[in-house]
Length: 127
Length: 386
Image 1 (tube, chains in turn brown, red):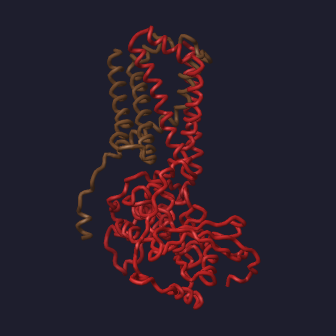
Image 2 (cartoon, one colour):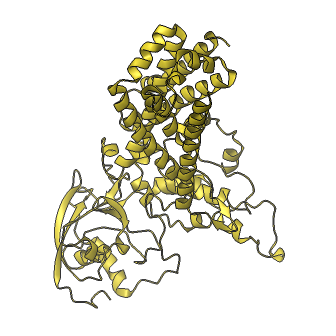
Image 3 (cartoon, chains in turn yellow, purple):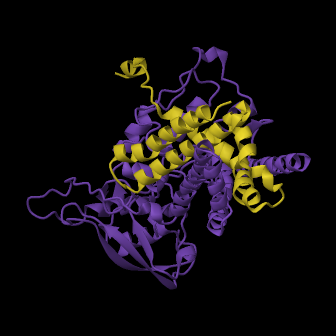
């Protein structure tokens, strides 16, 4: 019996993929999240510490045209959603908030859609 | 033994009783117990059994936090009764319940068969890399190799961590913290052959504690394994009182009817789990900030007018307030992220010693502060030059 258990091929789970996305989003938001919020949410719109034209349409568009800029925008938006999705799903599961399939669609599903949308927008906006 | 000091004070014990023969469900029973400052909760229970109700059932053996038999919920916390002292709980009444998340066999005695199966399922013994004869002598390990697994080997199987783990409470198939720590113990052992076989439940549910045992609850005795003393004759006689009352007609005293109490559906909103829930919800703040950026990208795609409208909303007071709240939540995320990180990774051994988790948290938070400051400084500098 024991030998049979040993020989069973291990059942692979998809969980590590979601853990990786969750962990990447968590680490990036932990390292740069506070600075990003201060920059885009407080300094830029209020014109504090930065030139006012810094947040202008042309400037931001140029940033989104740049391949490195695209990559940064994509990584931050998509990974932040995957991070939130993992934590919200497990918390809602703890709260027994509803059917697990519905909860998965409302969290991982949304993160997946946002990833596709962000990718599409960044391609559509041109280079 | 326990009468070194005079039992001059009295404490109230509210003990959850469950007698499968006569009780439909567990009920609390109150006892007044004379006590002295050197008495443990276990001694209080023994004194009830000696002089008030000989039918009170509970497990115990060593009385010195080595055997792991006397785990129970004391005022809602999983504790070993032998190392929980009445002087620390008095003058308030003490509420004593069997370990949470386990079926109750009788009074404070819970069913352990399922736990034992879980321990067995991870093959808790060394399967060496190569066969070794007695003549070849003992395996040798460096201090670093030993430090990698030693604390996991201290587990006394007291099951307190299972009582503390709401994920096990929600899903009894979850292999649980104790067996996972033991799994880690063999995986980290340099003598061990290969990655250890995981039971079917490993990785399911969210491990409240996977590594490093002591963080969420004190899982290992401070005293270590100092050897068990034999029970005194008097102690052995206590056990015989178990056989006291005659069973009602038609039902044997030995009849088993384990009672599993339902899990509190709002455990996540109560201490000590509330902090954990709040930590998890910081992930929502991170995603919300991502949503604000996404809205900006959508407006950027639609043209200048749309993007200018987005900027006007961002410069409003509501937006400022939202961003300040998000900032608070994300700073909390930073702190908790680096508090959790050392618990989810293998031990970091430097120079043969484990790096304390607290130090890793401090380094992580400092690194985050540095990264954020560097990003801010870089953008401000670029702003000045352009």
